[in-house]
Length: 278
Image (cartoon, rainbow, N blue to C red; front, side):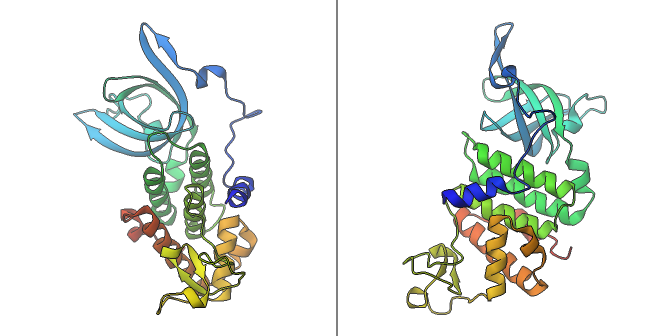
């Protein structure tokens, strides 16, 4: 499990650094007190938004250090709003909030990663990003996760830059996100007995590939090429992943979707809209 996460952290789309050395100022990490009202600053990626009243919006964000944040952005639906566009889904921002009774209030938002427009301009990227933010919302609790934050921001940046096929980027993100959450799949050794592989029977409920003697009747068998692709997506080996044929990609995508939805114990509503044709 540790080695899987370490490999993921070393891969290309997980790192997210600002300009210069990437160091963050102390005031970004510490809560402030302005006129007796406690405030805080952090980096956050926007997961979803909801309308509130005539001009406001509730913004759900996954932050670097304050976990999952639900805050009100006042007046952002007006055309004259100074930071409305910085608080759209898939955007990464440096935010300042003051702590409210039920919901926090966003006071300032400065863009750190303007990924939204580039992602929404391409349907395949947009549908993949929609699944990513929904997954991040489901796998993190209010305390959040730094590793999940970094993984999501890196994946959205990769989509916006068209670094890899959107479908491959999504499948890689899902496997790594689940691994960080404690559900790392096995694609070589038996997930039940630990018997050395390779094994070809995949059972999501059992945690990955399993030996024939413990496999439930009728369980699907994966081709060696599909298993190689799944391992490459988990490890971030993009040269191997992008060399895979269409049949292996299609089979791998089905396995990843089934594995993710089983362990999340609920359906991913946005996954049915994913464009796999790119």
